[in-house]
Length: 138
Ligand code: TYD
Image (cartoon, rainbow, N blue to C red; front, side):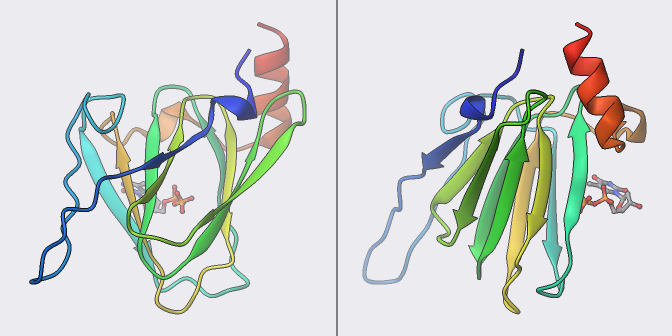
């Protein structure tokens, strides 16, 4: 079964010079999947909790390219981990079938998300109890 220990921080190489910094993210090289979609979350207040779902097919890379946020990850046995995303070169890799909540957004937070799927609302598990049941009954 999926474990919170399968969620990993990946530190990207920063290609900096006197002109500034650049980070490149390539499929199957810097991250462990082929990129199909990106989206970014911004303008969320500090009190807001986003996510609150698990995905059957999508794997994710989350990067605060600006500002900071936190991600709480929960597996079906109830183990939890909290990750602080606070640098543009610090990415969180989330495999499928982990419950996630994004929160504590700074006013300048831009949370970039990269994934291996096109958007399909049917692969989202948005009910926590259904997620637990589904995983435990495997
Ligand atoms: P939602 O999944 O609720 O965001 P979060 O990941 O923060 O929980 O998505 C918000 C809205 O945007 C919802 O109406 C679905 C839509 N959406 C897309 O159309 N495409 C996408 O790739 C994503 C992630 C969301």
